[in-house]
Image (cartoon, rainbow, N blue to C red):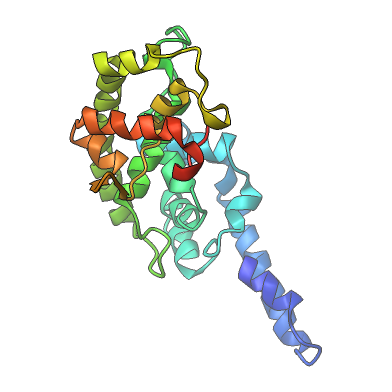
Length: 256
């Protein structure tokens, strides 16, 4: 849809009235179909028992708009419309979301980290948004080419989702264990009167465990990857990296 509108707006003066009219008719047909299918009611996933679909529903109803979805570069294309005509609205929706930067990773996070209203806010189990950030990192780690020239197929997205569920389960457990680790607690209690640079506290440094950097950095002659250290439970190296974050946050590009 966005491409069709762009073509009309940028059409030179020599463009025929017929070509403009045809484009407008095509756009009208797309929106008529969306209306007939009640596509943006999302009723077809509202009560789904599938957690991926529940995540899609939460994202589409609370964190984006129909306009943003239709601004996706492939919303309304031939494959999108074919899925609608075949009564496969979820496939059409996922195809559009596929080209919305950050959408699939956020949907994954919403799918695997649910609110815990009965748990106190200070409890590690209820650090919902922090664990959702971790889930987004996991998705982006496992789907590095999601914005490439090839659109991820529905099957690949489902397979990636299942792979990420297992990876996130491991990472979440390791985060909890790291936060409880004796050496981590000692680091937090050390020199509490001394503030870090750029108003970056020791707690800020430790909280980077929820957004572990996936790239490798050289430090003291060795390769360091926060993500890999966390995944392999190399807490000593991870804590050493977090201590460097505390001392030089701007150098490592971290912030509170």
